[in-house]
Length: 137
View 1 (tube, rainbow, N blue to C red):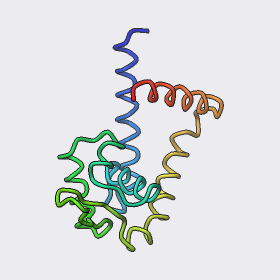
View 2 (view 1 turned 30 degrees about the vertical axis):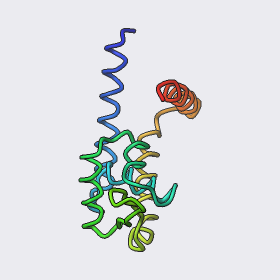
View 3 (view 1 turned 60 degrees about the vertical axis):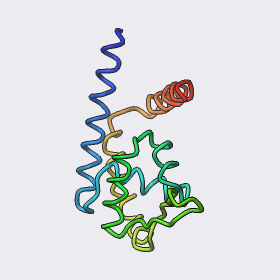
């Protein structure tokens, strides 16, 4: 297999998965990028914008736009840190209340995407992805 074919199919798969997730989140007025931020904050708690960007491998400008949208929607708030340039991002009570609905929609979407993909293949793919990601970091 050529490198081009590997990366081309990875890109196609990534786009398809993102589009499916966007469709699942559409009724809630959310997109996959917003879900990523909400999920990380729910899992890890309050983080700085820089920590979020680094963890999700997203550059600062798109992360700023995503956070601004989430602030307007009332799902996150920015808390000033010790340094004036540092802002902690945390979920609001509204987001905590809505999170189970979003998580259920995402889970349904994921299950639907995986229903024809054998469980042993899922485990192997997760293992391969994890090894590759660790090598890149």
